Image (cartoon, rainbow, N blue to C red; front, side):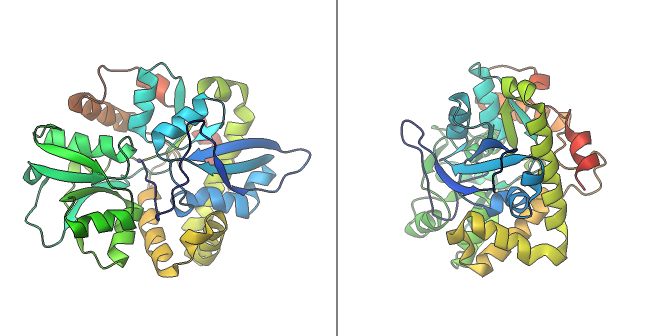
Amino acid sequence: MSISRRFGLVLGAAAALALAPIVMSPASAQTKDITVVLPNPSALNVWPMHVAIGEGYMEEEGLNLTVQAVDGSSQVLQAMAAGQAQIGLPGPAPLLAARARGEDVVFIYNLNPKSIFGIVVREESEYQQPADLKGKTIGVGTADGAEVGFARAILTDAGLKEGDDYTFLPVGDGGTAAAAFERGDVDAYAAATSDAAIMTTRGLKLREITPDAFKGFFGNGYAVLRSYMEENRDVVEGFGRALVRGTKFGMDPANREKVLEHAKTGNPQEGEDTALANALFDQLLVKMDIGDQAEGYGYQPQENWENWQETLIASGDLKEQQDLGQAFTNEFVETWNKDGQ
């Protein structure tokens, strides 16, 4: 929950997945170096991590982070499988697809408990519901991003079949997606939170037609290979504890400017447009808010994974049911939230 390749800056991987570092936390003789790979270069999309770096929480946990970006969740998972990153931020749909291929990757931290994706159309268009998109072209950031599985599930639920009733067209993100709308290349777009913010600030008036039943589908979160998790429990515990501290810091309105400063350090280009950064941060606060959920930050309800799996099977993205107990874990949540003050 792609959570997206945003703000027009693509640090895509080459065939060898040569990843470009974005930011690194201070190192010391006692720190453990880890690489975190993201599906896009946006620092605001992962602001709790950048707060945890900037406020020194990661360093206090003995962690020295190198943050890198590739183009989409599939490349995140490839980088992890190749040993080029210890922690990644894939979407749930690509993660389940990777597990179906035999990759033992585990979702450990639910960063976006509310959906970061939605299907949007131009405000003045006649489309009122997904079924109205029959015969139309739906824009997506990349062909294999997390937003594709999300949109396909919605359209399948509406009785539409890809190839027969509609077509996906990769058009990029943010500004390039807005241009695709303006040229008439696409009739709708599977947008992430940041896409909608960018297009709106460019004067493109959009309307969301995502059914309510899909608005609760969680988005991208942090994942590790099971072998790494079992051998490095201290890293997983420290990383999540620092994330919880960073999240709580950022949820306090008094710390807003510091959050934006930390995110700008992670991606200076993204932070140049302060109006856009503030607009996106407002939306992300909503997506990351857990409300009165007692378990705390990072928790993953079993039923939400079941909903994802059911829709992916219905849309053909998964061939058969998996043991979801192997796809995600909540075993660290209590420790993160108990100690993450």
